[in-house]
Amino acid sequence: MIESILFIVLALLALASAVVAVISKNLVTSIISAGLVSLLASLLYLLMSAPDVAMTEAAIGSSLATIIFFYVLNRIRAKEDSRD
Amino acid sequence: MEITMIAGGVVSLSGSLFLLLGALGVVRMPDLFNRIQAGTKATTLGTMLFLAGIAIAEPSWIPKLLLLILFIIFTNPVSSHVLARSAHHTGIRMSDKTVVDHLAKTTEQRGSESLQGDEQEIAAAKSKGGER
Amino acid sequence: MGNMLFLASALIALVALGVSAIRFFRGPDTLDRVVAFDVITIISISLIAIIGFIMQRSVLIDVALVYALLSFLGVIIIAKYVERGL
Image (cartoon, rainbow over all chains, first blue to last red; front, side):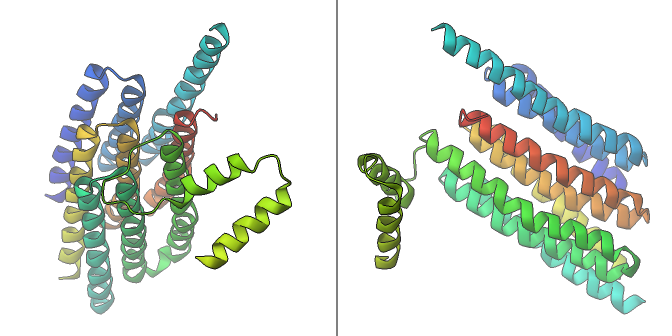
């Protein structure tokens, strides 16, 4: 019972944040929204009783991917600043 | 066994109420800095109470939950401090009801006295703190 | 009785998650969304812990620990990027 309620609400939130990640004009907002999708997906994996998959998703999808995205954005911004 | 379940449930329920109040503060507050304050303080206390309730109901999980509580106590204020500092440096506007901004005053003063030595700056900051 | 209290607190934490997601979707500025993301992370850590308690699996506390460690890094990196100090 409680698992179904949690599952439905978390899946709807993940869907809404995926829509925000697609339609947003700001790049930083899109990256944070993609991280939120990974967070909610790892919660869904937990509810499906797969803790190892959830740990991998939380570590790689939500944290390391966000960090690598921001590292690359920072390099691009530094290059554009030096060109001007 | 039942009494520990009920006690842990009451503690956990109060923690979840703190979490709800913190989330409401994040939505309702007029200003980014107020949102950071509401979202950090209430949520830290709420998570601590929540995990303490689980620890009361399930005593064999106490070491891991204690580690988690300690980690949250140490990292949550640090991340909120970094967020507030970044917001202040990028020039986020404060609410109209804000009456005092010590960080802007301090950085302005430091910029005007930058030719003098560091020790004088530190002494000036200390005397300023004493007056306050 | 005791179990019902834990189920109710899980539901209230879920409502708190949804309420802070409103600020995430509405937030006018990027840092507003970062604050909402931080709050959602902390609430989901406690939600992971209570799911582990309800399902009686102690592995999930390890997942919550890993998550707390890595999300802290993520918020620091985003704030440093916005401040241009990475």
